[in-house]
Length: 184
Image (cartoon, rainbow, N blue to C red; front, side):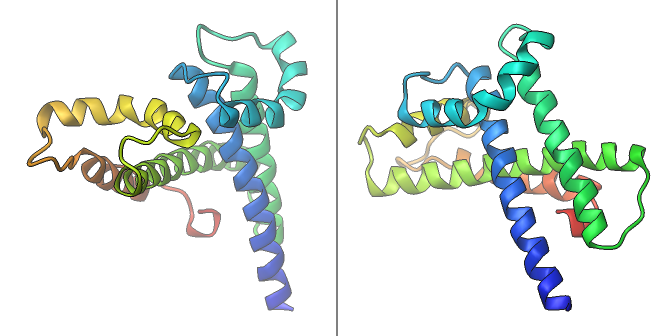
């Protein structure tokens, strides 16, 4: 029965985390003013618009920050932590679940940025200078993180080490988040 529980937890975690990544991408792409007409932006918008739209009536944007999507992401993270604790037979109070949900969102955000930087680096090796929808979105997302590092560590001999430095810093920050291992 343990194998069935592990498989169920894996499937559950994967589905919740993918949807949370999409919600986080919606928030991030609006914050960095990514191209709204990009096909990837459109996909993210369409996947998240139905559950976010009713919340936007009550929770309007604050400048470029989509508060409705952020509240929905936190609610989905709350559900994730609650169900994960139930599947793991852990008894946790609501305050702890709320705190773990925020930490889960932070861990997912750090992992999302790490993955996006890694994919952007691979795309730059495979097709440098080639314009594609994914590259455009990744550049919009990652450039605010890379620009300050490039000021300190400029490209050397055509090699940009800024993504490596940022990935390293993101992974250190990820390990400092006090989220229990079973919820990571």
